[in-house]
Length: 174
Image (cartoon, rainbow, N blue to C red; front, side, top):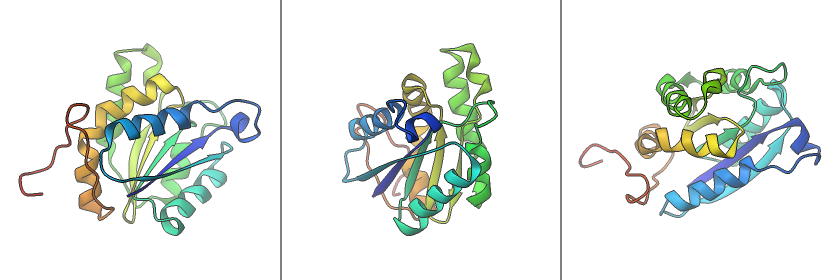
């Protein structure tokens, strides 16, 4: 399974800021997923055009079954990751955003400002996450039990998880 980690940050893309979100996502994935994965990390500046172009390339050209996008989900003027995803996705899965915000709200009251969510483009699941490494872990823990079955359903491929960390939920026989 090919998994892309797309970091959205003006400062990190210019080398002015050390990206901590991308490594946090990849570390989390490697701790949870037990099946073979290939991870590609990419950093792009904020904005609809840069994020949309990267998503299309990662999904359609590189063939990622899962793209985890970190950053650009807040209400600041340059935070346009949700709009970029909407421009290239076929449909949304609103339950992901609801679950991630609810989990993060238990940690920090500003979680309601996040516009994180999930969408599907072809056979690629795109999940948008906050930029904070702590919020990334909380968000993924809130939804990842459903991710393997979602990937099955959209034809992205199969991933297995360590049930001691995240027990993937699939119907019997799936």
